[in-house]
Image (cartoon, rainbow, N blue to C red):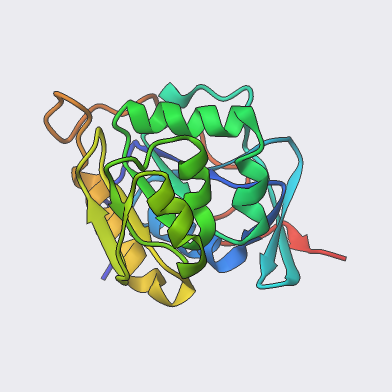
Length: 217
């Protein structure tokens, strides 16, 4: 049976650094968005290719659709933040990336974050008063930033402008993708009854869902 298309007309930003994203935490959610009828787009801090990793080993490369410094947050209906240790550590040092995340969160766009990806949310100061989970090593950072941390496979927090879906690690991906696709489908911006209007007519991504441009040398 063909999958039910629930995100038709919605553009979902996948924000990653030029190097360091955990590949499975990028490709599995990407495929889920595409199968649900949404348009995933790869956003990074510079044009060209991003280098994904499988733990500490180089994996595939993926072409960037939009450079965060030039991207308008209003052109995206939702945000996914993959993990990988080096990935959010780079993003949190980039003012454009931090501002992009903050703008989407403050606008009430739904956000899904996994593993170390929540570090960027800390830098954007958008976890205060929110409840979420993550890779255990960044628990203290989240708590110090005003969040409540829970050890759960997936957690949905609605105590803020927009829904926040979080998971701990790659093993949580099945629950993570099922939950955030459902939440993205029913998400609402402040004062708007779902299904809320899409930000714009989404452009197609430069690469096929779940497939890299090639193996790194």
